[in-house]
Length: 347
Image (cartoon, rainbow, N blue to C red):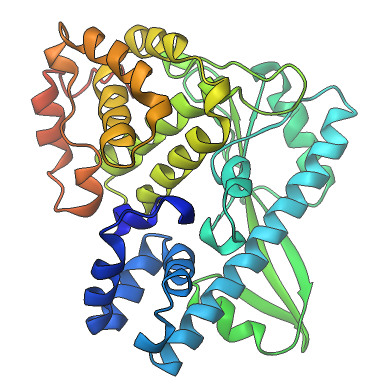
């Protein structure tokens, strides 16, 4: 059912209503699973869309409402912090590029449909320390003691954090608590929440991800963003075994739906061949076409299938299926690829 929720509301699969109705018979479990996979906002919009609110108890509806409010509050805080960071950085000739939820949240009809837990920025390697200086000047702090920076082997700086104060009545407290968002009170009507910042640099390190930027705005090109999200989906779902990785599938579907005309499928396949990622790219594109009916992907899929014909060692199994079923231990996944444990070029 989570697979269906990933689709934009106007493209919900035909089988989704009956699955939701059947699952709501054990509603608490459904809400808990959707909460854990960052799908609760999408579930609540689906329930409203299909007029199924009467199938939930008043207590369950209140729980969903409170968690969605908390996610909205945190998303707003993170976006506000990013806007401030970007405003100062660009005046110092540093170009911060938003990644993942920070970039794709605008593709969702509701803020709560795409919960975020941190700010992910990409900058040029030569600007990483300047970006850190900007963040420190705007109130972000390092962990204590400060972690060392390994520019030779890493691709991100140690995480920074900032406490953001939010004025609200006492009702916000239970919302933050149920959503698992840490907070404390500065005063009776002021909530302090911690926002996290990851400064990434050089996604091309060790041949990871080709980076192509839009010429007129601070964001990845549609082609590069799609390839990056596919890569992150594989890493989070299969390598790191994260249930919440399914939200990246929702990002991919909406990216193709909104920015499809700007995706260069031939270039995407060139990159997948160059980075030994043909299997995972083919797998995701197959589901975009055959599970979600995204016709814009058909040409790219055809090219990718031809590339994969001679690369049997690069097929990583049913990547999407791993999001909604029992997943194999990561060493079994790696074993099936034909790659040695220590030589994961695609990661």
